[in-house]
Image (cartoon, rainbow, N blue to C red; front, top):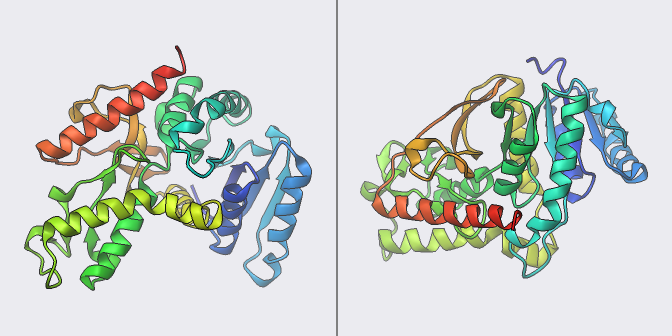
Length: 316
């Protein structure tokens, strides 16, 4: 794919969808953005507001629509639709309301854009990605979710500040559910190529304290933001832009996205959760198996069990 001809569809003109569309325009990640919403006036209001910035930027086009046909020939289609999480709710609490929306959305996308890469952002993202895969006729490598990319970015930035190094030199992943059972693979954490366990840390704090503090911070960050402003949208919109850019430019970067787990993870081959993958113009080019210790394997299995139970609850 080439960014000179790229077309990106965004389904849903709510807070997340509109911010994704705006970020794609501001960061010049494509040539055309189609902002789809069932309510055309909502899509128009958001698209027109974004469009007014284009004369001050690189020439692009943003098209509001309530017709799925306008998404045809998109390189990537970002799905953000669904009921938003309210204060006090977990991402899994809103599952039943969003599952049917996802099935209907995928049916329409298979009809009008069968070759597009589908990026699921709607929550709970891991289970909705599993539903999208099960509902679609397209190749599985063309469907994945945003997974724990944002959680990993949050961790790397905050840990880098604590250790007084650039976030680019912090190499550590958050994997599992994008939610309460996610965890950090500390056994595989490196700072500039040096194992975290051997990296000089600030005086007065232990490795164990750092691990506990940042595991808690990472898990609660989204909730803390939502409590204060009602939603989270800026961080995930940049995550989407980075994933879109990696696809459009065929960059083959590694991100922990929502995919069906490789059998080598020991959690079966049906559960979908955040795991590191090479992302390219083919979507999921290859899933990687991240080394982990016994405690981390236990946490992965617990996360997978939680997600499987939630998915199975839809069929009971």
